Image: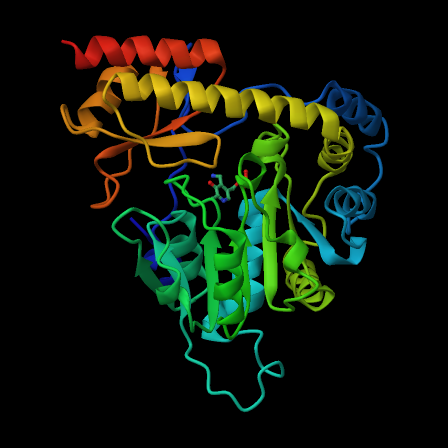
Length: 363
Ligand code: PMP
């Protein structure tokens, strides 16, 4: 029943987020950080709550300054949004909507193909926004080894990819990312949701490439998935386009509590580093323990692993794990259906997963 729905609403296939656990389960299905946020966050949120009478700063200036200092860029090169999902949606609207792109004026006289390239497999929200904003996407298949096919990503009127990629966890080197940016006619959006768990970030390239927008989130790196804070780091001209779209849509995307909590988290870099190191250690441990069970994973630079199952099917293992109180993620696509995406939790959570897997596979 879609009575009264617009034609657009009727045509959409919405994104399905990871399932919420019922009762007490080990939740390894949505790549949340295994540890709580810095204690400074709760204190900052409490203080901000006393001033809720006032509207928040629509430009989140104080948070932009903190993020700029964190990355060594200028505050004018930072744009904050309600989670990186919103930041990415605004990028699609500002740079790619209706197949137009920001390249006009930058590449005068060049005839530009109107397709935005994105890897297939990639973050499954991209096609959803593409539908919503009428962005003509060209899905570029991954290589045999599940890495992004760098050369096939060349030549789009725009480009969007996650690095490290999701749900594979496989990362491209920054020199490969740079080659793609150089050969993209419009804006190159690099989604670095998981970059704090990898060796590389494209942020230092923003002064060199005026068509680069790096999207980051505090959900994973700073344990703030519940607060909904993401941001874009880019040349000021791209930031201006994002602000224009944002103000036409909602001039207050970030509430006052989110701004205060996020700033406290970003300023506590030492805490974030310690937590990240623990997760990287647990990732190495998990990979080697899975290997002992004969389960191979793709080389991960994220806070999750993509593990291949070829005895019982990945879907059957997903169900068996769920019955044992462990939630992971299974994707039904042709290239993904033999894998489970498993978030790196605490050492104890991973031990629970590993014993459940032993039980399932040795049955
Ligand atoms: N990009 C990628 C690749 C992701 O996996 C996620 C998390 N689902 C996001 C962006 C969105 O993260 P958030 O909206 O919590 O910042």
